[in-house]
Image (cartoon, rainbow, N blue to C red; front, side, top):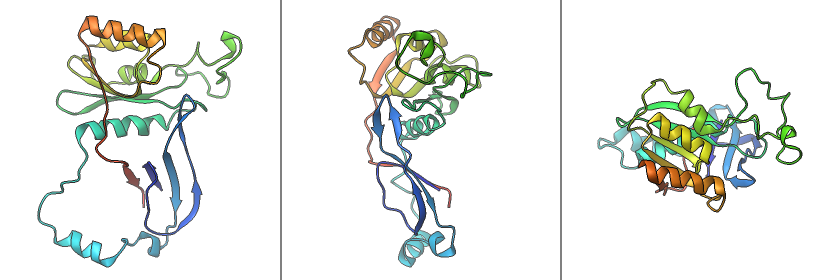
Length: 218
C-alpha cells in the first residue's frame, strides 16, 4: 500500500486504487492511498540501473527529511486515523531532543462509539459533533509518554483554537508549527494567538522543502 501527499508516480501496476482525500474542514489535502499489486513484477525496482546505483552508493543520502518535514508528516498521517467525514486533523508533539512523545487526531473520547454520536456540522448544538469531539492537539498532549512537556513543540495541520491553545500553554509546549491558518479571522484563533503572544509560545507556519512524502508497504 502506498500513501503519498501530493500526486506521485509509483512503480509497479496498481490492481485497484482508492483515493483517500484528507479533509480539513472541506479543504482537500492531496493524500492518496493506493493498493499495489503484490506480484514479483510490481515489487521490483523501477529499473535495474536504480538498483545497481543504490548498491554502490558510499556517501550519505542528501534528500532525507528535515525534522520539520518528519514531524509534520507524522501529524498528517495521524490525521488519517480520524473518523470525522469532514475534518481530519493530526498533531505530533516533539521534544527538544527531536523525539516523538505524543500523537493524536480529532475524535470522540474513549468509550464513546464513533457510530453513536453525531458527526454533523450543522443543526442544534447537541446534534452536531462540536460538544463531543476532542481536537488533535488535546489528544496529542494527553497521549504523551511524559508528563512534563516544557520546551517541547507541537506540529499540527490547523492553527489551534483557543481551547487547544489553553492546553498547549498549560502543558509547557513552547512552539507551535502549523500547516494552515485558514481560520485566522475567527475569534477562536484570534484569542489563541493573543494567549500565545502573552505566554511566550512561538508560532510559525510550516514551509515544506519538497512536494511529497511517500510511504510504501510493498
